[in-house]
Length: 483
Image (cartoon, rainbow, N blue to C red; front, side, top):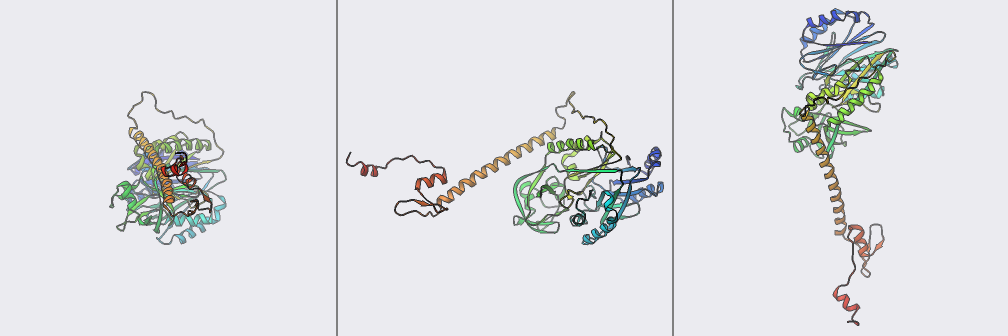
C-alpha cells in the first residue's frame, strides 16, 4: 500500500501531481481518493471530481466539505486536501445514499442490505454523513444494532462554522442530506482505529428533563439555554454556536464519557445538538484540558507506531481546532514520523466503541491502515524544544492550563464544603426535629428504636462533647447536709 496526499487550488496543480506520481498509480489494483473540500462550492467540487475521473475512471472517489483540512499533521485552510490510498491487493466498495430527513431507519436498512453480502470479509467501513440534516444517532444505532462491533470510522460534513450547507459526494453524486461510505475488503489489509476525548466535566451535575429529538428543551426543569447564560454569560443569538462550541455537555454512557456540542439556541430557551441525548441523563458542562489532550496524543503515537501503518487518517472535531487554536497541531504532529497523514475537521465523529452507537462529538478519531505484515521502523522521538527556549512560547496555553488547574481546585474545595454543610444541616435538622423522650428518665428514642441517654444521643448526632458539673440548685440539694 502507498499513501499520497496533497493540497490544491487549481486543476493545473492536480495535473502536475499526477505526472509526478505516475509510477505509483501504475502499480495499483485499486485507488481510493478522499477529497476534503475547504468550501461548499458545488462547481469547484464537480470540476475537481471530473478531472480525477478523466485521469482514471476506475478510481473510487469520496468526499466531504470540512471545517478545515489536515495534511501531515498541519492544519490546512482555504485549500482542498486530496488523499490517494493506493492498494496493491485490497478491494474498496463505494456506497452512496441520499437520505430524506425522517427516513433514517429506512436509509440504514438500505445501506445494510448493500453491506450484508460482504460484511464477513469487511476489514473496515469509512463513513461520511451530513450530520446537520440527518439524524446520525438513529442511522448509526440501526447499523450498530445489526452489526455490533463493525469497524466503522469517519466524520460528519462541516462548512467552516457557517452551518448553512454541508455536502458528501462521490465522482458522480452529491448530497446535502445523505451518506457516503467506503467498504474495505482484503486478506492482506489491516486496520486499527483509536479515539479519545480530552474534555473534563466541571460544575454541578444536572438532569435532562425534557427533550425533543436533537433538541434539549429543559435541564433541571428550566429552559436548557439558561445553563449557558448563567454559567458562561453567553447570550442568545446568531453567535451562540461559536460562543459555546468549546463547552460541550458531557454525559456518561456505560464506561464512556461522551460530549454533546450545542449548535443553535431557540427563542423558547431550547438548545439544539447534532447528536442524541436522552431524558433523565445526567450531564455537566465540559472544558478541554490541553495537558490531557497532549498526553493522549503521545500515547496514541506509541500505539500507532507499533501497528506500523502505511497511511493515517484524522477525523477531528472542529471543537478541538476552535479550542486549541494554532496549538491543535501539537496533537496532530506526533504521528507525522509514523506515516503520511491526511484528514479533516468534522461536525461529529464516528467510531464504533464496541458497546454502543458510534456517534460522538469533540473527539478525535484516528484510523491507520497497511497491507501485509508490518515493517517495523525505528520510531523517532520528538524532543521538546529546550535549546534557547522562548519563555513566551505557547504562553496562552500555559496560562489556560494554570487556569484549568485553578478551576479544578476551586470546584473540589466547593464540593468538600458542600459535603460539610450538608452534614451539618442534617445534624441540625435532626436536633430540631420532634424527638420521642421518656417523661420519667428523659432518655431519647432514636430512629432504630433504641433508647439512649440524652447526652449520649446529642453527642452522637452533633459531635458535641459533654463535661459534667452541677447547677447551684442541684448542688444545694445533694450537699445540703454538708453546707
